[in-house]
Each structure stands twice: as structure tokens, then as C-alpha cells.
Amino acid sequence: MAGAHKLASLVNSDKSMESFRRRYLVPDDVRLRYYSIKNLPVLNGDEILISVMSIVEGGVRFPLHPLLLDFLRTVNACPDQLSVNVFRIVMSVVALNRLLKTDLTTKDILHVYSYVCPGPDSETSCSLKARKVDVKLVTALPSSNKGFDNDWLVVSGDWSAGEPHCRNSFGRPVPSRLNIPASAVNLEDIRKVLSSNIYVDRFGQPRPAPLLLRYQPLVGNFLEAVQVVDHLDFIPTGAVSEMAPPVDVFEVLDKKQKAASSSRGKDKAKPAGPPRQSRRGVLETIAPDQQKSGEESSSAPVAEHNKIPPIVEGGGDRAGDLVTTAHTVFETTDVEFSARVAQAITRASCLPGDSQIWDKMSSGRMFRHISRGLVMATQGVHAVEARISGLHQSMKDKEAEHQKTLSDVMENAANNYGNLEKQLHETINLMKDAEEKARTESEQRAKAEAELDQLKEKVTLLESECLRSIGEAREEGKREGKAEGELKVLNEVKEQLEMVYNRSFRDGWKAALKEAGVPATLDLHLRENTPLPYPKVDLRESDKEDAEEEEDEDEEDDVQVVGSVEANAVPTPIDNPSALVSSAPEDSVLVPAEDTATPVDLAPVASAPPTET
Image 1 (cartoon, helix red, strand yellow):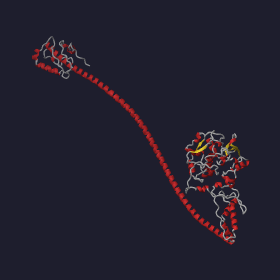
Image 2 (image 1 turned 30 degrees about the vertical axis):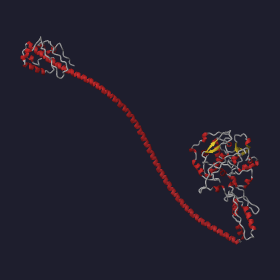
Image 3 (image 1 turned 120 degrees about the horizontal axis):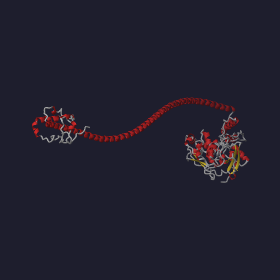
């Protein structure tokens, strides 16, 4: 089976090639050459190699569809390195775009499927693998194409219709092209395709490739796919795959007319039963001559199916072609053909029993029945027209009401949207103001913290300086207090010494006057005339002592005078008991009265008074 050429008969001769080109709509400017897989040629720059199966079941047509060319350029591949299922998927997506008015692209395909390419030396072709098992754009794909991949065609000429060419040699995929971000994918159209249950086959599979690409599968083993259950909201699976078989109305009429004529003389005629319904699918009943021909495939395109041969009105010895579900009475390009189709369909409604009754009627009765039927049809038409008119008016009213309601809803929605947008802008502005305020407060806080740190450092420095200043002030105060105390003590000692010197000098002065025999009545004995060495020192105590001495003159004889001056003890001041007071000098020089102006000469020689500071 691996070396079998099951499709070679379609293209291995001039006649079969001509039929193949006509069936699959190959333009005249596209040239095809058949080659077996065993003797494939070297391709020129403008040639590509494609399998026959890709055209028969893959849906490939010439010139190549832009989506297929874009897919080949995106995955950086040539047509001969792809499996037939890749062509089935891509061309089925083209059909889905046409049927569902979607716009799926290569990026959308690569979002649902992952591109797998084993390599040029592998016997496995590059393929598309569903990223999720239950998510597929196209179903009913065969699991293998063995035996149908040995026949190839070399394509040359204008096979791309001016579009950029794809490569014609093996190419490795570029990872950056295969990584499709979710933002670049048309998710809405993908969901629309996946949710649509069109062309459901007899196995319950939606979007099967055989129905989308209009071919009868040559391979019976299929890949696993999702099945659609029978539901009232869905298209019945049986109604899609099993449709009315073609009927040769001329043959039926010929047989029934013969039966009617043979039993015309009898009283009763047994009506013929309904014809047996075929269980074959619609794809199997398009053209019976396709099943008899062994060298033609059953995968003709849609345009080939729509090309209906003329129907010949048959008599008793001749029958026309079959009327199928592909025929229509609304054909405007060939009115005569549509009339023959309508006549054939109306003649098919002539049942044998009815024909016998019509044959027995007279012409007048036939016309009366026909008139009755026409009148009833006319009345029915008017009644239906009135009903439809009422329904139409009701629908118009409902539509107007719906439009009004919709306009109100849209207006309210627009107003609400405007209000929400305004509130959103206000909220955004408030958020911006709050953020700005928070940022300003944060900056101010940081600045205040920095200033506080600086102030703390300054306070610490001031504390240390204060402590140092206090210590220095304390030490300086101690020094100043000590110096001031010393100075005060010295001043007190000086004052006491001056007082002592003045007292001693006055005593010496009195003693000298008394020794000299100066009368007491003279002014020399007065304090004012006494030449004290320190006249500024108060001598009130001395005056008291002088008064006491004058009262006790009788006791002067007890005073011992040795040489010159009386030896008296020097009193110690009470305020400064620690001051050292020296005694009066033992020897003093008597100063004459004339020398009283110079008290310095009268100072004791032994101890001189301290100088004023």
C-alpha cells in the first residue's frame, strides 16, 4: 500500500488531466505536470511541488488563496513539506470565513494549533496539532494519508495571482513568527467559529472538513473530535448529513402512467407506494456518473456542483436527468431551465390515483375544479396577505417601539456613560491631587526630618558647648571668686593694718609729745593735728581710747617707756580673726613737730605698710 498510486488515474493522461483541470477549476495560465514520488524532478525558481491529494481533499485551488500563501510564508515552508491535513485546516478556515463572515488569519490558526515540523530527513510531514484536544476549528480529519501521498504535481505559471511567492524548498520555521501574542489574535471571531454548529455530519461533529470542502472522504479513519449532541436549539445532525435522495421524476411518471393506462378499464386501481428512501448522504447523490467512473474523484468544488446539466422533458420512452436538492426554480440566468425544473417538480406531484380521477372527469368538471382551486388559492392569498399585513403592521409597531426603547436605553446609557466618564475624570483629578499632596507632604516631611536631624545635631553640639561653657564658667567663677576673696581679705588686712599703724603712730605721737614735755593744751595733742600715716582711715576707736587715756592720766606712770616708744599689743580685728597682725614696732624714731607734714618718715622702720593697689 505504501507504493500504491491511488490517485494517479486522475492526472496521468492528457484526457484525465483535462478532466482534472476542468473539475478543479485550474486556470489556463497555470501548468500542471504529473510525477510519481519515485522520480520527482528538480524544481525551477517559479515552480512548486504539491500533492494531488491536497487538491482533491485539501481544497487547494489555483491560483493559491492569499490565506494559504500567507500561512506558507509565515511558517517558512514549501507546499510539499506539509501534510494534507494542514491544507484541509487552512482551506476549511477559508470556507468558514466565507460562511460566517469572519476574518480568521494565519495568526488565529497558529493560536489554536501549534506548528510541528520534524525535519527534512524525517518521513513525517509538517503538521498542525491542536493546543487543546477539545478546541478545534475543523473536525473530521483523517489520521493518516498513506497510499494517497505518492502522486505529485509540479505547478508552474501564474499560480499566485500576483501575490508574493512562497518558497519551493524545505524551510525551517522561525520561532519568533510562531509565537503569537494574545493581543494580536481575533478572539471574537475564534469564539464565533467555535460556538457555531454548522455542517454537522452524521457523527455529530461540527465543522467537518468533508462538508466544508465538499468532498467525499477516501480515508475512513478519522482523528478524535468533539461531537455535538442533538438539541432543540441546534441543527439536527440527521437533517444535515442525510437529505432527500435524487429522484428521476420522468421515470416515476412513465411507470405510473403505464400502470394507470393498463388499469384504466378496471374499477379499482391500486395506487403505487412511495419510493424507497435512500440512506446515502447528499454528497453521495450529487451525480451518479461519478460513482461509476473509476478515474474521477468525488471531490468536485462547489462551482462544479452548481453546474447542473439541462433537464430533458421526457415522454414515455425517454427520461431526463435527476432533479437534486442543488436545483432551484429561482435561476434568473436561464429561465427556460428553471421552467423545466418547475414543470418536473409539478409533474412529480401527480399521483397515479389522482391521475385516474382526473382522466374520468369531464372537461367542464375539470375547469370547475380548477376554478374552485384558483378561487380558494386567491382567497387564501388575500387572507394570508391580510394576516401578514396585520402582522407586518404589528411588527412595524413593535419595531418602532423597540427602536424607541432602544434609543431611550442608548440615550440613558450615553448619559450614564457621560456621567461616569465625568465622575471618572473627577476621581482621577482627585487622585492626582491627593497623590500630589501626598508627594508634597512626603517631601516636606522628609525635609522636616532632615532639618530636625540637623537641629538635633545642633542641639547636641549646643549641649556639649553649654556643658563646656558651664564647666569653664564654673572654673572661671571659682578662680574669680577665689581671687575676689583673696582681694577682699587683702583689703581687710590692709585696712586693719592701716588702722593699727595709725593707732600706733598716734600713740607714739602722744608719747613723743609727752616725752618732749609739750603741754596738753597745745593743738599738737588734737587728732586733727596728728600727722597720721593713713589719714583716710577712721580713728573713732582711737579717739575713744584717747578719751579713756585722758581720764586715766593717773595711771600713766605705770607705763614703761624704754628708749622711745611704748610697747602695746596690737588688737586683732574681730571680722577677720585669721588675718595675721604684727605687733607695733619696738623702735620708732621721734619726728620733730616741724616734720609733721611728712607722715611717711614717721612710719616704723621695722615693718612698712602695704602699698595700695
